[in-house]
Amino acid sequence: MSETSRRKLLAAGGAGVAAGAVALTVAPAEASEARRTSSSARESVVAYVHDHRSSEVRLMVGEREVVVHDRELATRILNAAGGN
Amino acid sequence: MSSHREAPEMAKDPVADSTDVYAFVSPDRPNTVTLIANYIPFQAPDGGPNFYEFGDDVAYDIHISNKGKGRADITYRFQFHTRIRDPKTFLYNTGPISGIHDPAWNRPQYYSITRIKDGKSKVLAQHLACPPVNIGPRSTPDYAHLAGQAVHTVGKRKVFAGQRADAFHVDLGSVFDLGALRPFQHLHLIPTPDGSGVNSLQAFNVHSIVLQVPMSEVTRNGIRPTNPAKSKSVIGVWASASRRKSRMFDKAEGRYRGHGPWEQVSRLGNPLFNEVITPMAHKDMWNARAPHGDAMFAKYVNHPELARLLPVLYPGVFPHLAAYHKPRADLHAVLLTGIPSGVVPGFQNFTGSVESDMLRLNLAIPPASSPNSLGLLGGDAAGFPNGRRIGDDVVAIELRAVAGVTLPLVDPSFTPDGAAGVLTDGTTDTNGGTTATFPYLGNPGGGYQTDPGTSAVS
Image 1 (cartoon, chains in turn blue, red):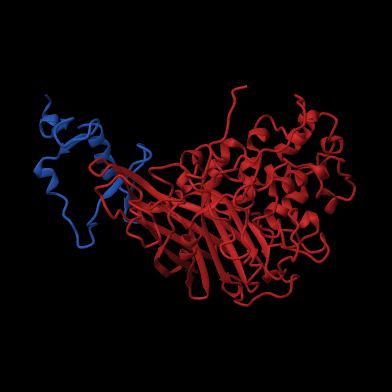
Image 2 (cartoon, rainbow over the protein chains, first blue to last red; image 1 turned 120 degrees about the vertical axis):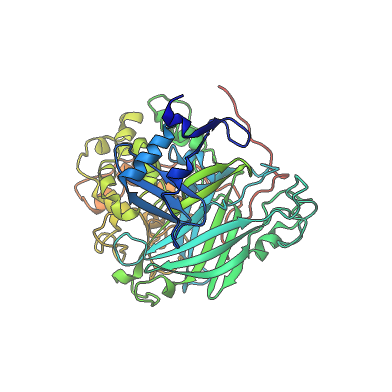
């Protein structure tokens, strides 16, 4: 197992995880870099990266769609989707 | 048809599938306009145990354009929520349903109405009750009573939302078998003996939203129109259905959860527009768009595929139509701009140059005392394409129009072929019919009372 993959715990098909889904836990050091703000969403959110070459991330929250252009966020989502 | 399962994606989503739209001056309350949007096609009345109902996850809209731009200046939005009274039973009803609040009805449905104007929303009513579906004499012994209880008064408006008999009629089995019209099929390229039309919607129900509002509520200047020649007398009407942009399946609850804004997945203005004008590859895209962007579909109106097919399917019957290659200015007016003044004496329903598929209703034209089901083609300016009444035979009207009957109105050099003026699929409404008063559509057929039809392989 590579160093990169050791930093994350991948669990597929385990208890409480839907078949075909992958649960990914980011190491605490990485997670702590982001902090919630007072306007942070307090409900479920769906993130959509339509074009993997773009920096655009679309967030579905409530009855709104928030379009974010954030290369780092898009890259982190794509990397996470790739399992690393 | 007229928009039942008309697009490939929408055919997989019947709860959001708009099937017919009607807009007419109320014959019994001529200071009001009645707007009807039907959804959920081909409901077999005996389709239990989970009978048909509106979608709690769908926003159903009726739109009014009164400024000539093909945009929704006023929208009435209907949103539904469904209860399960007793989660321990599989039954839709646990006994006879004697009223719409009867606890024996295990799955009552309610709705809210929101009026959206100039970007501002106002909730007009909440927790309005729908009737149950018509199950049979044991479960819904007095269906007319149940339906009557579901007619609500909201200010000066009347509203009903629930199951009705589908009043649209068409011979789907015939027309989609290479354009056959049974009364004329001995003339078809593949001839068979003539026959009577078969109403493919016979014995099927739909779910209807029926809204009656004072005319002054939907006109540009807030005044009831009295002069048919005035542009302010005309409104555009269409219906749509929207779903949340993202749906995630919640395995724990066994259902989808919506996220994000409402996105339109279905719309309907003129009957049969998306059905027979729009090419299949564009139908679902058309459904997701608003009327004001319909210029991109104008080429399909100006040169409709059906007008090219008729002379091929009926060899020698439509020589004049076959020889006509200019853009169809008549269909363009009827479907995309409205008919301007000077084309039909004493009549106009022109909404401006913005090409947009809408029903266009001139509110200053009073209801006909003896309606002609051929509407304007039959000399009755109170009928389609001036809005659409329930009894208008839109299949025959549009068949004749496409075949060239309306073309001389804008191109006097054209003489329609003899057959054009008598085209019909040969069907009539064989369901619940209409009523003289609100909600006008007849009671739905009951499950117990319905005999399945017959089918044959060859």
